[in-house]
Image (cartoon, rainbow over all chains, first blue to last red; front, side):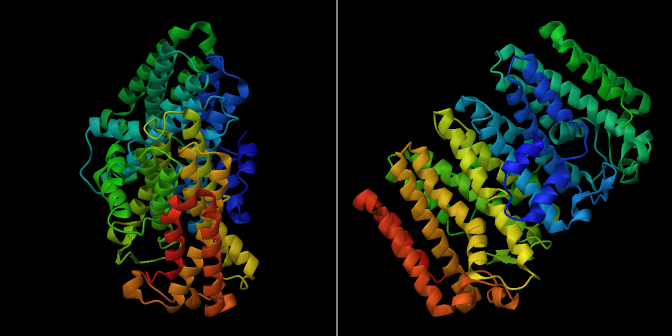
Length: 279
Length: 279
């Protein structure tokens, strides 16, 4: 689906097209499209619709990585074991490829192929924009940059930052599956709550990998948080308590799915997997 | 309206909020929102709806200026007579503010306040994404960067670049006015054609200002195109022929409005103004 929507984007310039493909294909855990497509299927949506919503959220995730890796931001050279987009191409191309991927995400959602009902398409756009924008992901990255060079943050500030920076888009991915399926409000709320807990657990697991993981397995530089003096849940609680908190959130995410019965087992497995993963 | 939608965006971090306001308020000719709001009024839309569409297209225009001014792109220090966003704040904040403004544009269009019908909102999102993305504005900027350091372009390549980089969003602005008014296809096509000619005329006028204008009046650096060895319609045709071409396009834009009768006089004046302006 990502290949198809990238081709349909018809970039006007070949290097831009190559950078957009490089940033999105051949890599990544695809957590967000998995949540969107699996949530959509669970709520009875047609497969194509869930996949298109999944492609849109993955485009937003990938654009955010491209911009966050830029020298002016986190200055990372390595991502998924390969040179980052600005290392492989250049800074200008990385900025533009990110802009184009973000824009494409909204084009994909607004396309009648995603859903026949305009109200559903518009609601998906509104939710994605809210999760990705100044009150969500972009706001979280701004909080992250502001925290560098400021006194270490307390736990509630760290949790707020992470809810914005990574939690909002992960929760939206699960919720959007319900929206594209035109599921009842209860199902939508359950998937959103599941996504929120999963996102928080995922972030702690990510910080644990940074603290104790191995660069070759993780596929990016590790030990960066401690090196940057950055406050994390792991740093504030310690490794054991942080791992316990991630497992608690994961278990709560699983129990939220009681609403759906056994058909939600794939999402239950995902909630368990994110806290046990090693990469 | 821009003030209201920026406040509703509720940025999570104060510097990000300040940069978003700095990038969008107190400046600019507001050509695109003028076209959207005037086109919407001409086609009978409620005032609030045209203004919201205008705010969305202006957010996209302003984000593109913030990113284009970055050191990795056009490296401009001055914009509208003031320091550019990355000079006033920093590069990271400029990247994030641009990302947030782009995202907010889609949130504004997808909001039920913009139109009661979801299909209209989704169509506005789709058209804006198309005009702003890899096949439109971002693609045009990529073509522009690729042209630097390459052999000078011929006229048809320059025209294509400008259709993408500035023409697509200007044409969309006029067309979107018809869309939010649910105007008949003829009216929509007429406003789009008007916007295309106006956009092309506007770009030639911009290049003429760069070639013969005065920095204090124009509010940004001039003589940059010639200094950069950049091919423009003015450079390829000469000043007199370029001015004649801009006037021809402007006159054609005016005649396209015959469809609407005298109620379109404000748009006719705009088409005449863009080619005679001195700033």
